[in-house]
Image 1: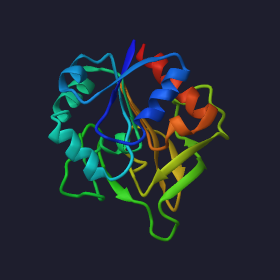
Image 2: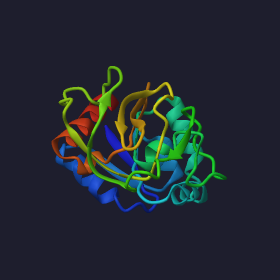
Image 3: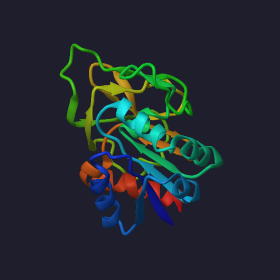
Image 4: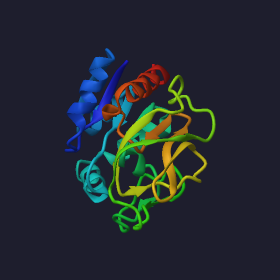
Amino acid sequence: MRVTIIDYGAGNVPSVERALQRLGAESQRTGSPEQISKAEALLLPGVGHYATLVRALDEQKMRAPLIDAITRGVPFLGICLGLQVLFESSAEAPPLRGFNLLPGKVCALPSNVKLPHMGWNQIALNRKSQLLEGIDSSAYFYFAHSYAAPESNGSTTATCFHGTNFAAVVENHNICGVQFHPEKSGDAGSRLLRNFLRLAA
């Protein structure tokens, strides 16, 4: 099984590739709609601004094949912005549509806490999570964001708190997303990626 990494110009693609290589996983990066349509498993990393991601996916005609593949049941993991785009829209770029595969809108974190939410934080399990299987409940993950998806969207399996609770992990059938960066989260992040590879196999 090969993981197809969506390359729309995000800076963290090489680090995601290296994290998968350390696990012995085969991966390829692509910006091709045709390759996305043929993918066995999809991973969408994301850093930066929501508008940059959405516009790049639309300009490179990747939105439709991505949504089609996910709807068909192709295993999908979204990282950071890759999680946020699963929802209807984001307050970071209100006019732009997300994938609308999960209900709710991404909102800004409260202004009374330090932004961006940058660094290590713990998460709280809401319900059984296949992505977090075997990971200690006291584990820390690396976050870097100022916007987040609502915790009450029906798919949240773990939350995090930074001024407010927000969705840290979402899982809905073949759709998986994490607000943190597993490729920067040490052993816990590696285990999560390994769990995704197992689910996708």
